[in-house]
Length: 456
Ligand SMILES: Cc1cc2nc3c(=O)[nH]c(=O)nc-3n(C[C@H](O)[C@H](O)[C@H](O)COP(=O)(O)OP(=O)(O)OC[C@H]3O[C@@H](n4cnc5c(N)ncnc54)[C@H](O)[C@@H]3O)c2cc1C
Image (cartoon, rainbow, N blue to C red; front, side, top):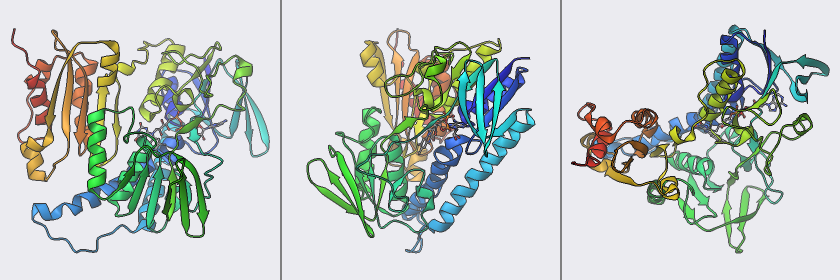
């Protein structure tokens, strides 16, 4: 029997454990904080739970348009919101731990290091254990980047891991960083009724994302009262009593009651014994892997945020599954980022699948583009939805859908049909030809696809 040792119980680790057990391996999973990892305990699950409350309030804010008068004073009870967030995350961690154990995985609570190509050493409550393994999977994740000039104090200067300790709404939250994490929290707190200033070092929010989508979100942010400071690089963040002052590199200052640092992530790879075991790291400390999650060291695989391939829970899980399929001789489909879908949980959401417009341009691929606003969709009108669009990219001549963007409420749910189209190389005509319900937002996906029809 093949013995696999997995370090890290996030989606990269626990999904791998489940696959490895199914394929008949003997699996030991070492986790130092909690099964589910940062995904479940501090990142994805808590943030999306918080966003569920914010989305609800945003919908209520639009009630008058639908003919409903709501009392003026509707606000979130932050202590109750965050209590729900943390208990839901803990329960989810417990559910996953039970599933992993029931599948026959040995779970060890402790901190592991790689002691050699086939050995893992675990330290747990003062005791040490050496685990011999035929293969090791490193899935240790990442942690928030901080700056010596902006040290979190856990009370007013916060990382995203520390936000859930708040029991009252901040009076004025300054969010530093306008990538996905910064934009999602800025949007969430804006929806909760908090004054938010978003400090962005770039020309626009969400740099690197679809330009039309990012511009739309920035417009919505401003319209909802958020102050967005573009081309504004943070130099330092200092707390004085109940005030935090964010100083920008050009000398301007922004004062708030709280500051959220969303400065990106650092891989948890230091001190793990990886390089000594022959694993190569890049300049940022990320583990170098190939498309089947192999590192440079024979028998050592890596998955998830510690590889920096694409820092998403879904990608971490897929990398973990692929690693175990490869190791244990099952059919392997190497990781193909050209077919990936992902979502930014702002309000409205931005869902993307396949190739981006930028990637298409860089590759010199000839495509036809159709963009269709949600505002003209009958269901959107009924529901009071004004912002959003569906954009599709199809290869010129053949019509194969290679990518798409959906901006709108619950875009994360709507995008699956496009994900299917991209992964199955469907043509725009095939997407347009599948029946959609009338009235429905998905009708706009079919409508955009119809715009791509070319007559021979
Ligand atoms: C605020 C935020 C929101 C996000 N929202 C989403 C989202 O909506 N959708 C999405 O797909 N992605 C989201 N992400 C990204 C997602 O959280 C990560 O991509 C995901 O956590 C990566 O999973 P992982 O298994 O690599 O690592 P993790 O989930 O971080 O798990 C790694 C685990 O390894 C453990 N560990 C580390 N070192 C050791 C050691 N030496 N010994 C034992 N255990 C160790 C850690 O304790 C941790 O539990 C979000 C990220 C952030 C920051």
